Image (tube, rainbow, N blue to C red; front, side, top):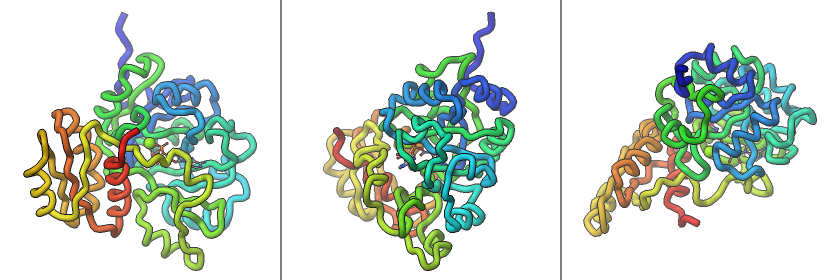
Length: 312
Ligand code: TXA
Ligand code: MG
């Protein structure tokens, strides 16, 4: 008997896997997600097991198009429709009020729900073929760096997924490289819960009259741990190349300097791969030069701070 393969690049294999209650790790423009049919409670429960994630951490529901919004959320405000029209498909997650027919296990028991329409062509093909909502966190083991290639997913999850039941859908590298921006639209004014692939300046422009507030209150707490996105290597943050060289000169053990100058897009696209590579090579300390805070720089700085935070 031929052992079924875990890895595929065929959407026509992956979409039926979702319908059969299996897990599909799939590419998005931000990072790879670990997806399940959001209407199948047993499949959703397996996401938490495979990821090693606490059950009270909410999942984002991925949709093929914004027309499905009202199947998942209620009281959708006009501002949500506007952001969806302008920025979907794209790296933006909207936090809305959960539709009562959505299993609370998807949202970690919360009455809010995060939804997004990803832009990656393979994700779009998968969602179009499947037809329903796909609940998916990033496809890494809990607390680790998010995966931006199928090889990263396999490195974390191959021992936890079941060939024949689950698949990893290879669609090449994620181009944005950091997770989606999360905006809470259930509060007034809207709050930025996580900086990400859509820059704050663009949101502020579209939210004319409703400037984004800093995250506060209960939704701030969900999964936004101080230490997260962490490689095994230590991470030290510095302001410029000279400070990085000075740190490397006194460091104990091997070091790797990350410095992308002002190129925040490239920093975002390559950050997680660089952190994983440092671990693969047994680097003791990553010395990261902080990028400017503009554009994707805000998200890169946020992830670097979390990677550098004291570990539990
Ligand atoms: O780019 C992304 O957003 C990727 C791709 C796969 O779409 N997904 C992703 O999912 O980063 P995850 O689960 O790793 O991170 C989602 C974050 C978590 O911190 C979670 O707590 C928060 O979003 N979140 C999701 N639903 C929420 C809700 N209803 N209330 C508060 N926070 C929520
Ligand atoms: Mg994650």
